[in-house]
Length: 189
View 1: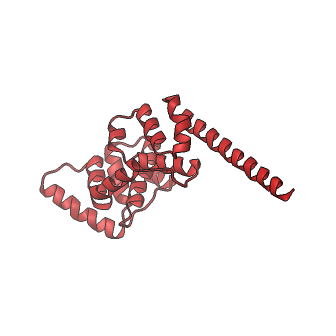
View 2: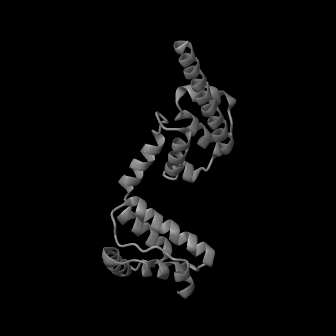
């Protein structure tokens, strides 16, 4: 337990914020990997970090599970925890947000960050981690002027796609700056 606390694990109080709930699980799993925890330790450590409403919820849940003769494991904890604090309808909404993501007025940096954050909600990508599909999905959401330049390249490496898109954005920005400067000098002459 001392080593676990040295990793500064997060606490969870029962907030109904799906991103906070998901982050709680992700941070715990990162610590579990670093400590090479057994499945039993994972459950003990996770329950230890619950407080307030979340602790009450878990106490009730574990009683019900035991009455149903369900073996309480880390995976069972995770499933029940996410059912409670990140329910299916919210996960589906995040997946739809990902599938409908468009660059619009976002910079490439903003679009890429949002794409990467939301891509974890794509069930298709979770079940079939295909970089080519990820590239296509990313390109599909770009503004048309950028998509027309990058799309025909048929790139299959996500980092390469993002780098090419950044180059196009930089070029377009410098091109517009030159146009503005030219118009300024023409009108001030």
